[in-house]
Length: 163
Ligand SMILES: [Zn+2]
Picture 1: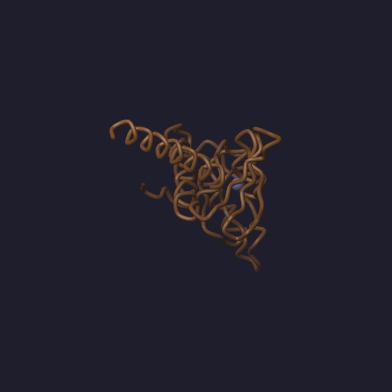
Picture 2 (picture 1 turned 90 degrees about the vertical axis):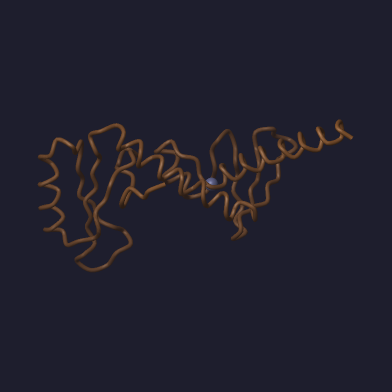
């Protein structure tokens, strides 16, 4: 999948494009240019909480075309799917016997998260996925594990019958 450029979420949780970090004055000027373009639906100038110094501002914009917005969302989900596939093998899942909706996930960094009703207690889910309608790597890894288990079960079953 081709990377669509720098992406982030806007205030309402919509997948959006973002610029590099730049001084505030430059960001405001760039935002003004984008504002008058019909291919752009909305523009924000925002400050990065992680950067220090004057180059800590960026411009965030939402494309007008629904297909472009979907493409950014697909990319954001794809990146999480890749992580689920790669590091997900190292996750441990423990379903709670007293609650059919609750599964504990121990990540590779040995953090414990709770998966319940397609929600997760990890920071990525709480801060981004919940707003944007995405699934975090823990939820995706659990889904993958379950479909693997179903597949293995079916294969074993079929083999037994064939013998
Ligand atoms: Zn998660």
